[in-house]
Image (cartoon, rainbow, N blue to C red; front, side):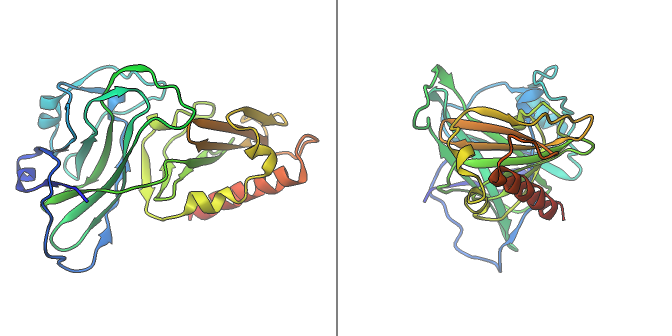
Length: 286
């Protein structure tokens, strides 16, 4: 398994390396999880020079961020604060290199550390079955914030299931989470109706199997929609609010809105599913 190693260059605030096979030989104690948060950097910054090959960056100051990125007005539909507190955080960027079409991606899934080193786990994916990629060069990337550190950082490529579920409740209070088989993401400050989740900051909790487990709750009538959008009742965020569900499987994305009030078009299974979503969100908020 290939590792991407970033060593003591981190002390200078920036590091960029290519994939190699250097592996740490000592374990230096038990590994514990490192908290990290997703950061939609492309909403406000462009990389000045793209990386044609797989690479990673560590940025530890605003000066270095400005050196390698160009700031621009927010281009996302979600309002985004570009400020990074470099007194407490490093920005980690990871890049797949040049790809021939759309449909490729790279994601950081978990981060662990022991007394000597940090491992950033990530996976890559290509166009999904049933997807029609757009021709043209792309440069997939992912960005997260991690606590400031002096430890060497290694990047570990893994294999993961890209499919995921987003659940949420909207109304007086908005709570939205993404369930993956490798972690749980909590999206921050989600605006009702604006569900471009890749544009929101998020915090990650490392827990495996949540997507597969929750998928068992989804009624057959919703599974069979396969990429469609359906609304049950008339969910009104200014009044009774509602429940949101999004299922991403391969190239298909199914979106469901369910009125908090039980309505005639909600079957017994859909009502039970609505309750399962609400119960799960209560647990995730603890």
